[in-house]
Image (tube, rainbow, N blue to C red; front, side, top):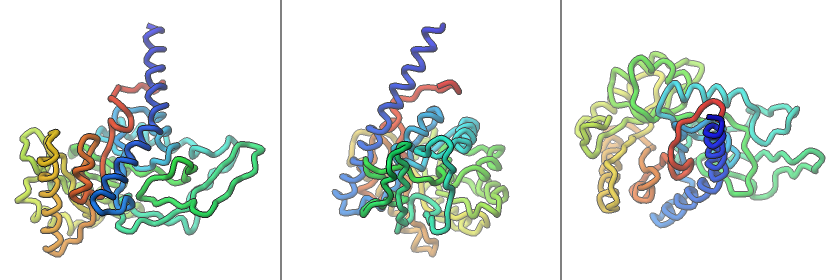
Length: 316
């Protein structure tokens, strides 16, 4: 039993040592895809889907400059949110005061701001080493990714709920997340709006569209999306930002692009109805290039960052 436990922990360590390299590879894919589509990479936010992975894995990604994370399972997510909110920012030496948000530390409400704000990097050198301090060019976008040399930003993590939503979970989701990507019913939206604390500002939401018509998949039918978007836009406590879609998996890039194009066209139609949407949450590990080519502003990537999914224990 002990040998099996040790082997499991070794596997966790192996996964975590690859996270920074995997993140850099995903960021490179995003950059190449954006430039190939004639877009700026800064237009595209990356959500690291950390479901089933430990708080330590999330912390490892944070150390590599990733601050937006997506979760599907509420109780698992709440444990991570609590665990990571009680630790000092990565890169702060033991005994050093946490900097915390300061006046002027502006950041977008989400990672998909059309004009992401720039924030100075906060560098923390080893004890006894002269502090490097900000240098020319040490700026990064709150919506983009840091360079391999970038130090950690001392900002709160941004949590995105991206899974199906049960009615009895809406209060905790509204209280603990910044974004919700899978709203597809007015009842759920109303419960989220009622539960959102006024002190936290509007909950950023995306309307999920079942663009491929799969019976096993959540999401409103495309022909019903405009009416639902109009209803959602009237709810207090919520800010409707855009559309989310998870098309059927396929290796055919022509089909991938056709599905994502349909979502983009639906967003354009909703905008023509007077509802201002700026977000397309679409594209994952296997199809992010097609999504970016068709206008994605948020891509949700899990396996390509964290590796194959393994259940975690608090000791991992």
